[in-house]
Length: 524
Picture 1: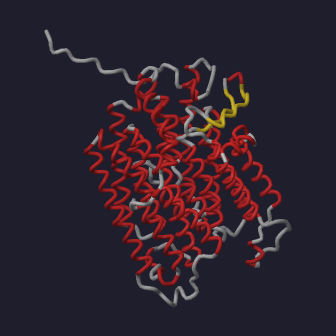
Picture 2: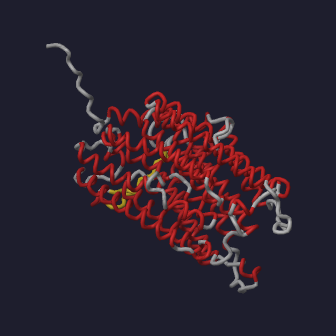
Picture 3: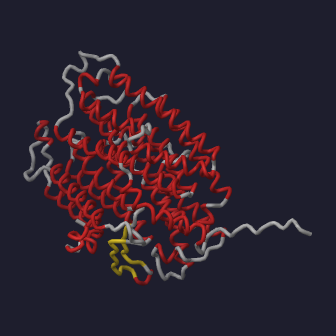
């Protein structure tokens, strides 16, 4: 298959198409799509044309197939960027539209390409008004997400980052439950401040390089003073830490995911900020990232996120908020792996990002389906679902077991690697972080018991139905991914081997690596 795809030239054009296709599709959906959901509700006759949701789903499926093609042409035995594509853009500023992937970004591109069409199809009836605009924004968000994962030029990366944030703000603000715009306003204020700080740091970094290039490879070779590294790293970390919802920057996330439409709740949970830390913040400013104080503060915050998120999740009465706080807890494991900076911990962090995309997305989809059926996400509103909706119950169990890191699921692979890698460097932090696994089992199994085997209100849920065909197909895809990665993680880990080694070597021996501590002489 690899040779066939290469013979078609897929490696020469797949990345620009991966970013450009959703933008083109967004225009088509907005101009040609029809809001047929209103016809069924009897509120408005359609204006003619295909269903906007069908067009959006088809466009997202094409995007997913493109990511599969990218996986097929990738050669894990090669070093460096693959499927490279460069286009001159702003020569006066040294900026080019430079795209590429390696084994670090490839699994996340594929995960995103699978999750987004699945999330849209599974939440088919969740949004019933202004569906052409919703579909167009969902596709623009897709383009931004893909751009974040494949951009090698910092200016292109920043534009993709903003293209990801703005549609999300509109999706949450316009289609939130009960017209709740407060959560979307908090989201945009939190993320915008961090993004502006990152832009200032990008400009400062570019000026240090005499304005000759904004490419990641060129900027990584610049020699920066320790003070400059600390300031620029702080600006980048502000943007990525806030977007990742690391404690104490997490407060916007549960509110936003509780009121957001299901598709937006899923995309808010994708850990793009953690990827950006591994791709940009750590390689560009290794002395700052490994500074004893800075590193220890971030590691402690990571462990606090693990324990705090799990404990607060145990106290939640709303299913969406429980999932959101569990996501914050898992983000702690990811950050712990990123800043421990052993090969096992970094690989575990990436595997945890993949698991979060699969398992957390599946949980939010199930929560959205329950909300569509019952009008509520309160845990007190559910009970006896195992008997009434067996397929939905099965998908909920698979996703929740991956969340609690059951062996044989994707969640176990990531957290196990993070803990093993962390224990070698920081055994105390690893032991404390392990308690998060115990707490996760407590809130996860408690939620399953209440939703699936609690008292069933026959009068309230007399018409409750099990999964429809499109819902079942979508969730089966995610469940298959959870089990496949958990049982056979080797294809992903094989692609992660070289880039994680390169990252650690660059941090330790690159031009901005921390200066070695001179040996202390005990002689006279």
